[in-house]
Length: 174
Image (cartoon, rainbow, N blue to C red):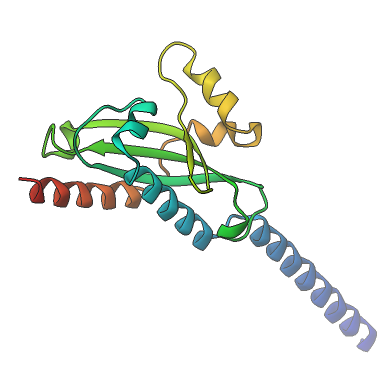
């Protein structure tokens, strides 16, 4: 009976260890929530502080402030674990322009996947809209992120925060 209990305990410990190792491997492969938050803040800052000329190059034309929501879905290198390791960020964005309308819902907006090089100066690449858009997205975004590039925001909190900043910017611009 003792051998059976020892065998059962050994099997239980082995099974628990394998389960823990599997969970740790899975967690290690998932993007860090903190890193994604840092990347979202960095890309938001880059987009919101871009000059009107830079925004014109991205397809926007305006005389007002830009307010953006950003949700990263990938990086280059893909295994980056800290902001200093990241060269490129692949993200969903939604930017609204204040001035035309004080209401987010009726404001002029641009959205979709973008690629942002984290450098000095940063580089923002936006696929040109129109016929062939999906192909231009696939050319811009690495294949491993193609399915993510066409998804909607997975968390509305970034958009809600942008809406609040938009309302504040619109009310102070009057």
